[in-house]
Image (cartoon, rainbow, N blue to C red; front, side, top):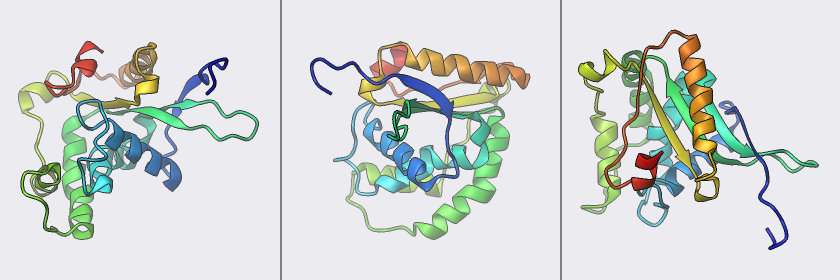
Length: 193
């Protein structure tokens, strides 16, 4: 982008959950925002595993509630994701499906490898082996949950709120009474959202 140019317009569309290239791009966004909203590329040895935990299950289990914020396709230049907003209407059912369908396959594909003690990869492997369950006192009041990541160039211009509105409309149309979102204490940008 030159000093004279304007940022490419961004639009919201459903994720292409059956497109391996787009899945790779969304996994990359996950890594580039994993360090409390900043790039974790230099912190992780296993980039793919992060996406397998925090993006892949949503695309596989709830593709109709997976949106991408992307540049618009212009004159043959394909649309490029710069963020995503993933939701599930029923967290308990999602976690059950995750446990019975997603985790066994992932565990078989990613046998425990030696990792640097104290590295974030230790946490990733621990998460796969013993994934947390959302407490019932949360899911009883807020059965849906969301996962959102926006690259820095997509932050601060109301795009997150546009994605939020899109997701909430879809969840309300399904009769969902509440939504929860977990945010790391160190991710101050997301807390402001």
